[in-house]
Length: 352
Image: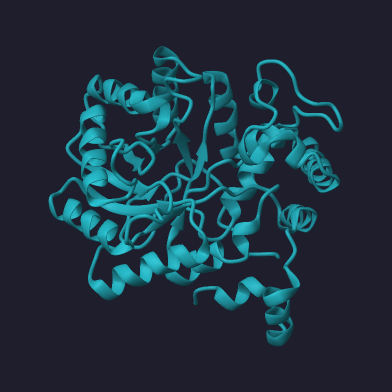
């Protein structure tokens, strides 16, 4: 499933974060490690380095380290003479009051006010709903977000971790009811997991949403640090928790994974760069991607991964990666639709 790429990745370039959204650098800082795997001193060093090197979008969530990630960022912001260069995004839904569903009116109002307090700011550039809430009517969630925008607490809204039909329902309901419409979507996306290309990527193209993908390194798999048929050990994510989330060792220890890693490593070797740079540059090249979230435990990891901005993959190298990592189409309805239209599936949704 080949797609056109963006211009070369460079931190001094800017991409629009969806219609009407702020302009951001193509690499963003994800802060899930702050207060959990990364202490405050190192977190502040990461934030300093990120901004010094041209980064703009800082992404956090109320649930990260039970609010400590936001507190750490807030104390960093308080010590800066200006934060005009920073685009600040946070999320709510999974850390609500104990007796309230995650995306309900009561929950979101409390969540936003809590995030503003911890971050020490008066407004958020982007506020994401962190996932679908089956217990709350989407109209209630959208009405609440619209009120928060009118109050000046939120500038733009986005969503994360939904299915295609859920995201389309959110967008359509917002548009038909006169609510604020999402400008950005945040999914998992990397060479090992391209399943958003069946529904979510075409939807973002059709609706002109930006994307800020998380997990570009596949939980460490795309750094080359894991070995075939040798379960990881030691101070790595999978060494400490082999069953960790979607990147669990038994889930991704497949022939397809190792074939992708072989191609990515060969391209990395040709450029004399780490495999991680190839993986990050590939995600940043994908259509609809506005900014790729980089998460790191250490300052050295962040510094090294930001060097991916210096790598430009050729069209031939992108084709090699696309071919090796192609997720394939289920025979029905996607394969059947592709056959009927006699054109690659994704092209039927490309915005003109």
